[in-house]
Image 1 (tube, rainbow, N blue to C red):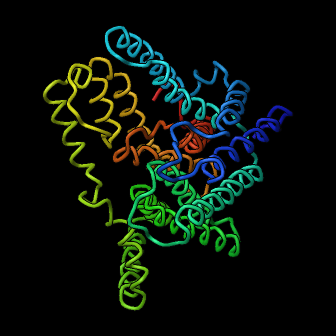
Image 2 (image 1 turned 135 degrees about the vertical axis):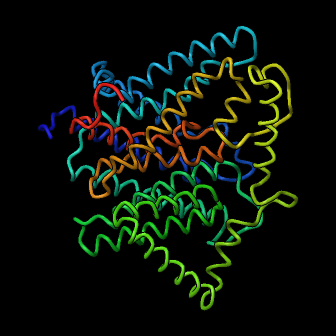
Image 3 (image 1 turned 30 degrees about the vertical axis):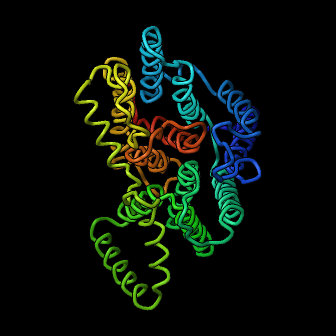
Length: 399
């Protein structure tokens, strides 16, 4: 790695400031997870997050980076196509191109920031440690403030529990990876493992079910990457035995997990009627694939799958740039997480962290690209992974 310049140091300090704001945005003092909190109006921290993000992006963006990294270049091209398509749609239908494009500019900016930032191993550890400490503190405060204790309540918190759940789940995956890193001493491994378990406990408590289950899935995948298929079978066998032990000798632990995952609003199924909404979107798409909701109001509310939601709301005629970008990025990051990820390398694990919101997008409405700054940290990690591969000449000018 090249010698750090004064600009590199300033970017790092600004990155830590942005990280702190993104985490604290979810603190109950700024963003209360209650039915009366009116979360759509944002937080008093929002202007500061936007300002620090914009400055960091302007200090990071360089045209030549688009030439060296096809991920950035392709993302920029798709954003231009999306802007043109939505602007065209706004001439005929009630579409807000500015707010729609903004949703994609934020993750693009985060990807650029992660790609350009140059962190030493010590700075990387500071960055990750600060994130884990802050998100653990925020999760604890949200639970003690809005739930009162670590108990499962019958009534869900409002929808931003899923946004917080994504950030907490990111902490689970990151802490678990660091707990398995071979260069860490035993006490550091224990610390990271405790953090991972605590954050998983928090995700269960706020009942961010998709975020919890997908974080667990990726943790198993991390074990597979570290130990291979044979050890993975051994790990699954050990986990099965532990599950039976817990079921017999500590049924309250099983009951906690079961209540978190399987209880919900009265009258709704275990998916909170998401399958029904998605089925309604599929039916509407089959009826009017090119304009869909733009042409007719099919009455489907909150489709919980990004691909289906985009097609349903924009139609194939205006939504195709978003759909093609999403699918290409999804397949690209899955491929890189399989072929390019080394969990003992700080920067390449960004492919796994970046994959997390894409997996969540299968059952959520706006992920992986938002809303707001929810997935900013994940895209920053993904950018770091892209830069590592470019520096090692494993990602070339074209995919």
